[in-house]
Length: 235
Image: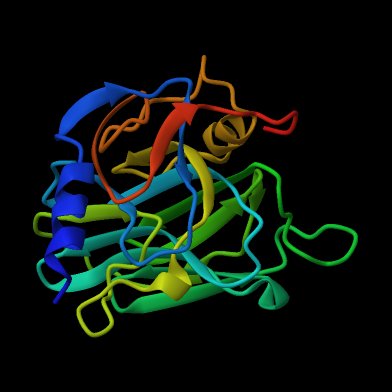
Protein backbone atom coordinates (compact mmCIF):
# COMPACT_ATOMS: atom_id res chain seq x y z
CA UNK A 1 0.00 0.00 0.00
CA UNK A 2 1.26 3.49 -0.82
CA UNK A 3 2.12 5.75 2.13
CA UNK A 4 -0.69 8.19 2.87
CA UNK A 5 1.40 11.24 1.94
CA UNK A 6 2.10 9.83 -1.52
CA UNK A 7 -1.57 8.95 -1.98
CA UNK A 8 -2.62 12.49 -1.01
CA UNK A 9 0.04 13.98 -3.26
CA UNK A 10 -1.23 11.97 -6.20
CA UNK A 11 -4.78 13.08 -5.51
CA UNK A 12 -3.71 16.71 -5.41
CA UNK A 13 -1.76 16.35 -8.64
CA UNK A 14 -4.74 14.88 -10.49
CA UNK A 15 -6.40 17.52 -12.66
CA UNK A 16 -10.16 17.73 -12.93
CA UNK A 17 -11.57 16.03 -16.01
CA UNK A 18 -12.55 18.69 -18.53
CA UNK A 19 -11.63 19.34 -22.17
CA UNK A 20 -8.65 21.64 -22.47
CA UNK A 21 -7.25 23.39 -25.52
CA UNK A 22 -3.87 21.85 -26.33
CA UNK A 23 -3.38 23.08 -29.89
CA UNK A 24 0.13 24.50 -29.31
CA UNK A 25 0.96 22.47 -26.20
CA UNK A 26 2.77 19.27 -25.30
CA UNK A 27 2.94 16.86 -22.37
CA UNK A 28 6.36 16.62 -20.71
CA UNK A 29 7.08 13.44 -18.74
CA UNK A 30 10.21 14.57 -16.87
CA UNK A 31 11.19 11.53 -14.81
CA UNK A 32 11.28 7.76 -14.65
CA UNK A 33 8.59 6.71 -12.20
CA UNK A 34 5.74 4.27 -11.61
CA UNK A 35 3.44 7.04 -10.36
CA UNK A 36 3.06 9.30 -13.40
CA UNK A 37 0.86 9.08 -16.49
CA UNK A 38 -1.90 10.86 -18.40
CA UNK A 39 -5.39 9.35 -18.47
CA UNK A 40 -7.43 10.33 -21.52
CA UNK A 41 -11.19 10.42 -21.02
CA UNK A 42 -13.13 9.24 -24.06
CA UNK A 43 -16.51 7.61 -24.57
CA UNK A 44 -16.82 4.64 -26.91
CA UNK A 45 -18.05 1.12 -26.22
CA UNK A 46 -17.40 -0.71 -29.47
CA UNK A 47 -14.47 -0.32 -31.85
CA UNK A 48 -14.21 -2.30 -35.07
CA UNK A 49 -11.30 -0.26 -36.43
CA UNK A 50 -8.83 2.33 -35.18
CA UNK A 51 -6.20 4.83 -36.18
CA UNK A 52 -3.99 6.20 -33.40
CA UNK A 53 -1.38 8.89 -34.02
CA UNK A 54 1.01 10.74 -31.72
CA UNK A 55 4.35 12.53 -31.71
CA UNK A 56 7.14 11.78 -29.25
CA UNK A 57 10.56 13.18 -28.34
CA UNK A 58 12.86 11.19 -26.06
CA UNK A 59 16.41 10.03 -25.45
CA UNK A 60 15.37 6.72 -23.86
CA UNK A 61 17.30 3.65 -24.98
CA UNK A 62 15.38 1.19 -22.79
CA UNK A 63 11.90 -0.15 -23.51
CA UNK A 64 8.87 2.04 -22.78
CA UNK A 65 5.10 2.24 -23.25
CA UNK A 66 3.50 5.04 -25.23
CA UNK A 67 -0.20 4.19 -25.41
CA UNK A 68 -2.33 1.69 -23.51
CA UNK A 69 -6.09 1.14 -23.84
CA UNK A 70 -7.79 -1.11 -21.31
CA UNK A 71 -11.30 -2.56 -21.17
CA UNK A 72 -13.11 -4.39 -18.34
CA UNK A 73 -11.81 -7.68 -19.78
CA UNK A 74 -8.22 -6.69 -20.66
CA UNK A 75 -5.66 -4.34 -19.09
CA UNK A 76 -3.91 -3.87 -22.44
CA UNK A 77 -6.55 -4.29 -25.13
CA UNK A 78 -4.41 -1.98 -27.27
CA UNK A 79 -0.75 -1.38 -26.49
CA UNK A 80 1.88 0.61 -28.38
CA UNK A 81 5.28 -0.29 -26.99
CA UNK A 82 8.86 0.54 -28.00
CA UNK A 83 11.39 -2.16 -27.18
CA UNK A 84 14.96 -1.43 -26.11
CA UNK A 85 17.05 0.62 -28.52
CA UNK A 86 19.35 -2.26 -29.43
CA UNK A 87 16.36 -4.28 -30.70
CA UNK A 88 15.00 -1.48 -32.92
CA UNK A 89 11.53 -2.92 -32.59
CA UNK A 90 8.01 -1.62 -31.96
CA UNK A 91 5.26 -3.87 -30.65
CA UNK A 92 1.53 -3.33 -31.24
CA UNK A 93 -0.96 -5.43 -29.32
CA UNK A 94 -4.67 -5.61 -30.13
CA UNK A 95 -6.69 -8.03 -28.02
CA UNK A 96 -4.75 -11.27 -27.69
CA UNK A 97 -2.74 -10.63 -30.84
CA UNK A 98 0.74 -9.11 -30.88
CA UNK A 99 2.71 -7.87 -33.88
CA UNK A 100 6.37 -6.80 -33.86
CA UNK A 101 7.70 -4.30 -36.41
CA UNK A 102 11.37 -3.86 -37.29
CA UNK A 103 13.34 -1.69 -39.68
CA UNK A 104 11.16 1.33 -40.34
CA UNK A 105 13.29 4.16 -39.04
CA UNK A 106 17.06 3.88 -38.86
CA UNK A 107 19.74 6.52 -38.85
CA UNK A 108 23.34 6.11 -40.05
CA UNK A 109 24.25 4.05 -37.00
CA UNK A 110 21.24 1.75 -37.38
CA UNK A 111 19.41 3.14 -34.37
CA UNK A 112 15.98 4.63 -33.84
CA UNK A 113 16.30 8.39 -33.80
CA UNK A 114 16.83 9.94 -30.36
CA UNK A 115 16.27 13.58 -29.39
CA UNK A 116 14.10 14.15 -32.43
CA UNK A 117 10.35 14.43 -32.88
CA UNK A 118 8.90 11.19 -34.24
CA UNK A 119 5.42 10.80 -35.72
CA UNK A 120 3.96 7.39 -34.92
CA UNK A 121 0.63 6.04 -36.19
CA UNK A 122 -0.96 2.61 -36.03
CA UNK A 123 -4.07 1.27 -37.74
CA UNK A 124 -6.16 -1.85 -37.21
CA UNK A 125 -9.35 -3.22 -38.78
CA UNK A 126 -11.33 -6.08 -37.23
CA UNK A 127 -12.71 -7.17 -40.61
CA UNK A 128 -9.27 -8.16 -41.90
CA UNK A 129 -7.62 -8.45 -38.49
CA UNK A 130 -4.61 -6.56 -39.85
CA UNK A 131 -2.51 -4.02 -38.01
CA UNK A 132 0.04 -1.63 -39.52
CA UNK A 133 2.56 0.78 -38.04
CA UNK A 134 3.68 4.08 -39.56
CA UNK A 135 6.81 5.89 -38.32
CA UNK A 136 7.57 9.30 -39.78
CA UNK A 137 5.27 8.58 -42.70
CA UNK A 138 6.91 5.23 -43.50
CA UNK A 139 4.60 2.21 -43.50
CA UNK A 140 5.36 -1.24 -42.11
CA UNK A 141 4.22 -4.53 -43.53
CA UNK A 142 0.68 -5.46 -42.50
CA UNK A 143 0.33 -8.21 -39.89
CA UNK A 144 -2.54 -10.17 -38.40
CA UNK A 145 -3.51 -9.62 -34.75
CA UNK A 146 -7.27 -10.03 -34.16
CA UNK A 147 -10.72 -10.17 -35.79
CA UNK A 148 -12.49 -9.32 -32.49
CA UNK A 149 -14.07 -5.93 -31.87
CA UNK A 150 -12.95 -3.95 -28.84
CA UNK A 151 -15.97 -3.79 -26.56
CA UNK A 152 -16.81 -2.21 -23.22
CA UNK A 153 -15.96 1.15 -21.68
CA UNK A 154 -12.26 1.76 -22.09
CA UNK A 155 -9.51 3.68 -20.35
CA UNK A 156 -6.60 5.22 -22.26
CA UNK A 157 -3.27 5.87 -20.55
CA UNK A 158 -0.30 7.68 -22.06
CA UNK A 159 3.26 7.04 -20.92
CA UNK A 160 2.60 3.81 -19.02
CA UNK A 161 1.60 0.16 -19.41
CA UNK A 162 -1.68 -0.63 -17.62
CA UNK A 163 -0.57 -4.16 -16.71
CA UNK A 164 0.51 -3.70 -13.07
CA UNK A 165 3.24 -5.61 -11.30
CA UNK A 166 2.36 -6.37 -7.67
CA UNK A 167 -0.31 -3.68 -7.83
CA UNK A 168 2.04 -0.99 -9.14
CA UNK A 169 2.75 0.41 -12.57
CA UNK A 170 6.11 -0.27 -14.19
CA UNK A 171 8.88 2.24 -13.49
CA UNK A 172 11.06 0.41 -16.01
CA UNK A 173 8.45 0.86 -18.78
CA UNK A 174 7.56 4.48 -18.10
CA UNK A 175 7.96 7.04 -20.86
CA UNK A 176 10.34 9.96 -20.24
CA UNK A 177 10.26 12.79 -22.77
CA UNK A 178 7.68 14.90 -24.57
CA UNK A 179 4.47 13.92 -26.33
CA UNK A 180 1.96 15.90 -28.39
CA UNK A 181 -0.71 15.75 -31.12
CA UNK A 182 -2.34 12.57 -29.79
CA UNK A 183 -5.35 11.64 -31.93
CA UNK A 184 -7.62 8.60 -32.14
CA UNK A 185 -10.24 7.66 -34.74
CA UNK A 186 -12.67 4.75 -35.00
CA UNK A 187 -11.73 3.97 -38.60
CA UNK A 188 -8.60 3.32 -40.66
CA UNK A 189 -7.05 6.35 -42.29
CA UNK A 190 -5.71 6.43 -45.83
CA UNK A 191 -2.00 6.54 -46.56
CA UNK A 192 -2.25 10.19 -47.66
CA UNK A 193 -4.00 11.24 -44.45
CA UNK A 194 -1.30 9.59 -42.33
CA UNK A 195 1.37 11.25 -44.46
CA UNK A 196 -0.32 14.63 -43.91
CA UNK A 197 -0.28 13.96 -40.18
CA UNK A 198 3.46 13.21 -40.35
CA UNK A 199 4.01 16.47 -42.25
CA UNK A 200 2.23 18.25 -39.39
CA UNK A 201 -0.23 19.89 -41.75
CA UNK A 202 -2.97 20.78 -39.28
CA UNK A 203 -5.00 22.56 -41.95
CA UNK A 204 -5.94 19.32 -43.71
CA UNK A 205 -5.38 16.65 -41.05
CA UNK A 206 -8.77 15.51 -39.67
CA UNK A 207 -9.44 15.78 -35.96
CA UNK A 208 -9.79 12.57 -33.97
CA UNK A 209 -13.40 11.46 -33.52
CA UNK A 210 -12.68 9.26 -30.49
CA UNK A 211 -10.54 11.99 -28.98
CA UNK A 212 -8.90 15.08 -30.40
CA UNK A 213 -5.67 16.66 -29.18
CA UNK A 214 -6.86 20.22 -29.67
CA UNK A 215 -9.68 19.79 -27.13
CA UNK A 216 -8.63 16.87 -24.98
CA UNK A 217 -10.41 15.64 -21.86
CA UNK A 218 -7.69 14.24 -19.62
CA UNK A 219 -6.39 13.76 -16.09
CA UNK A 220 -2.77 14.12 -15.07
CA UNK A 221 -1.60 11.72 -12.40
CA UNK A 222 1.78 12.55 -10.89
CA UNK A 223 4.40 14.78 -12.46
CA UNK A 224 3.44 15.53 -16.06
CA UNK A 225 3.77 19.12 -17.24
CA UNK A 226 1.57 20.78 -19.85
CA UNK A 227 3.68 23.44 -21.58
CA UNK A 228 4.10 25.20 -24.93
CA UNK A 229 5.24 22.81 -27.63
CA UNK A 230 8.87 22.84 -28.72
CA UNK A 231 9.40 21.93 -32.35
CA UNK A 232 13.19 22.04 -31.89
CA UNK A 233 13.72 22.59 -35.63
CA UNK A 234 12.66 19.01 -36.49
CA UNK A 235 8.92 18.38 -36.28
